[in-house]
Length: 390
Ligand code: UD1
Image (cartoon, protein in one colour):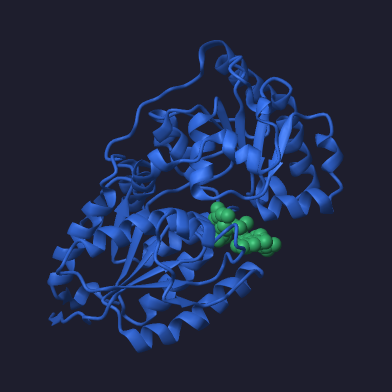
């Protein structure tokens, strides 16, 4: 049994897809405030590459431009993951980072963790321990595997520690720090773009979202393969949205995956008489403004379940499960799947009473990234016990 000195290279931070950016931005800011931490190198795998899915969010979140972009692009899961791994490996060889820091559950998260772990480079996973227990979700595989090989795991809700313990991950590696995504929300809340401005810019009449008559509007986001990749599922989802829109007008910034499939499956006509404004993917500040001003949100996103809880806006999640149970037990979230009856009951409640208001979970207070930075200072100051290295 001995000790191994840590490499003193940079903190190698990885992002790949849109939901990673709002998690990484507060981390990079918090790291820069700790003078004893090594510098940051930001790597973008290029999993998301559209202007609307990328640069706009980087600007909004004041994320520095990536130091390196691996330009992996789209592909099957195997191709996307493999390409990210191939292109990430030489970066570890060259930079010899102190650790690799990954967030969330996208393919880039797993790809870069796996490369680092095999090179005996410590892996830090932010937003660890979330489980939907649904292996049909690609993200669930990414979560389970990333957590298994991570050296240090930061969790957003206490419940996640139980998931990790059940999988045999030592409690000493796991730290409850709160939610870095909510750090971003709190930081940028005051700069959110008013919904009327976003609609005007998209060419939608602002009377669409109610002009003080109290009708308000709902926001939709939909992109999970389970909802948008088959004609049946997408048809059911659109039927739900149409129903709801006849009672509350909806604003839907459409993810490229959903947009392509609506056209490919010939489903666009299902929305002909619906009151739904279809928008391009929006920036972070536009989205924040839309969510904050909404009467309700319909989504299958992970992050938006959390953001609506933080904003106290009722959220109807169009999935059968969630890896974020605190949004149900404490927040504003209700699982409705594509069940029209369940949705209708929720809409009745929202229109009559305002719906669930919930409370904000512990440590979703804007300081999660600071807590992580403090942990890293201590952790990096200690040599790695060899028995802890693979
Ligand atoms: C990915 C993540 C998902 C996350 C989502 C947020 C995985 C397994 N999935 O899903 O967890 O919630 O990002 O958006 O990592 N496309 C573009 N422009 C882009 C990126 C994608 O047009 O910049 C289109 C392409 O047609 C592509 C499709 O969207 O094939 C899907 O992109 P991909 O990165 O494979 O997965 P997402 O569905 O975005």
